[in-house]
Image (cartoon, rainbow, N blue to C red; front, side):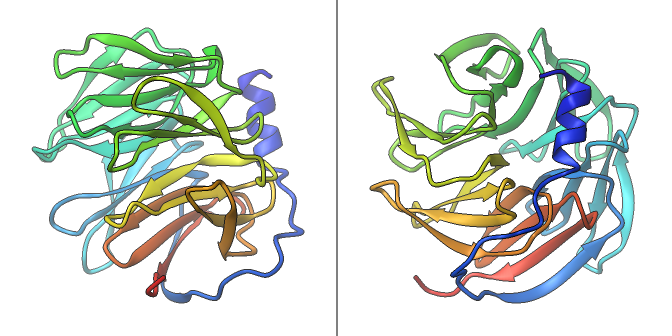
Length: 264
């Protein structure tokens, strides 16, 4: 599938939604984005959203004010902060990862990827990157050296590491793949209509992942079964779990919704 087809398909996500969704309380709505694909939060509580079709990353401060934090990119997708407050951005169309310092200085951190999409840091401080175009997961160390982690994915677009060192990968081609700490891979869930970029975990080791084929967010159990926690999010792509809040990005609405996560 070409990059153009990926864009067109993503904009035509089904509007039928999922059934039997858990009701979460909507806390806030942030609007005015252009295909929000990645969401991240810094240590000061400021929210960052990548505008996939707008070539920018937007910063929303704690008062709700919007500003352009980074620009001059092709198709910014995944976002992730390191331990010192630098923001990393995967550029889907330019095949690079950028690093942006807290004061907004942007530089190329690593390059030579294959349509990099979702990104996340592992517990060792290495950046995990989904190589959508080559069906691989790679990791990048602090000096920018790239190392293969897993291959044979099905169009991977999102990745996260749990507290036990296992990786969970959302595949646009279908299903959630688990890469165990010992490197073995298995399909842990096929309950998704079409997994999206967004996948994250909280401090209780609970995995949340977007299902943009069914316009919802699912909570993934250890046995691979899922529970719908947010429904009817047209073009559901991005997700972030922070403290007691679930942030969800919608391509159809150009919005990010913040939901309160109650006790399980």
